[in-house]
Image 1: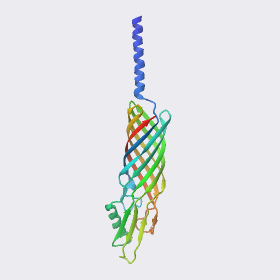
Image 2: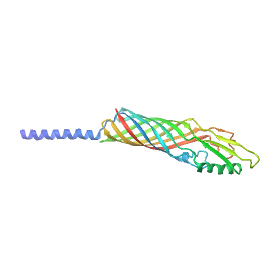
Image 3: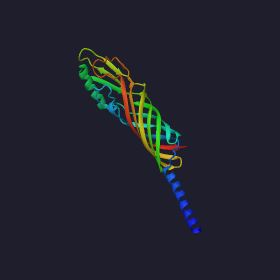
Image 4: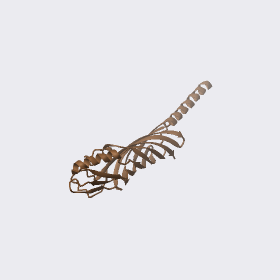
Length: 245
């Protein structure tokens, strides 16, 4: 009898230990967190296009992004998450300027067009939305849908000067924009726990905006390139350090 009780006790203790270990391994409860991240922001679609005939082409380049990301879990593994980030998508290079100059010559029937390009694409994003996290052992998979806005700090500014080959001259200007526009997107992230309250992780963010307003001066808008709105689409790949609480 004692032997059977001893065996039964050992079995029960083993089962309880295995269940506790399994619960620890699955780690079903997510913790709220804040992250600091940095990485690469790559323009997509119209934003990266260099097609002169496409008035939505942005000539944007790959650049850096840095920011803060956080989530507050209000029901089990469901959270409301927010991202604040800064992006730099570069400036027009010599090839871009030559491409524009050649095509303006054709559009306005000029022999020579001089283009001066200053400023660069710089903007900030503030986006938030629901996030659900799947946890297994030391790994956490975060899936999120988000919406918010993109605030332009600057965009490339162009001064387009024509010669007198057709007895008329003109200077057109595409002005730097500081406009605000709605944006939406989603993200997927994978975090790995390196300590009780610390994770490191990779995240991919997709961000899309129908466009920030672009203003011009002296541009008739009847021939040639005439940009009034610049769509912004980008995908960001980042590495971050996370503090859980």
